[in-house]
Image: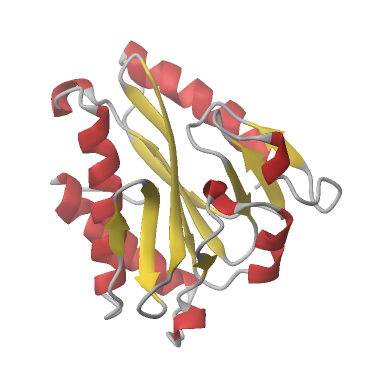
Length: 203
């Protein structure tokens, strides 16, 4: 799905959730290859501006990549009945990812000062397997997470992913897990229900 179409549709849905005319929703999709610049993005972290389209976005964070083989989840939740705690919400998103990876026997972790979910490469280095970037408007969330299932990891070379140079990026398939997108989606749905203590309906 084209990125700009997604953002426009998200903003419409968020307004409807705030107005009480639409239910909360999570979208699972893929984008064509592109880079997005969050609110903390620095120009020197865009290493190859001509490689893919670059979209400036209102989510938090720095530069990230989206493309085929990566599952993007846009999460539109009303945080008012969930304590209006943005830090707790981001932690819950990380827990959702970590729990999903555990369903494939892959150990993911969060690290202080590094948003996202990481897997151990060696004693000194971690590789990022999932990114987070959120925005909240009147306590309704949007944007969300991106999990690398099997994207072309060389596409990350055009940016400094999330401003971090000391570590790399990886994917489920890169970790030796022959997971397909349908299997990942089932795990995401099941773990979302557990992490956020809700029942979901696929539409």
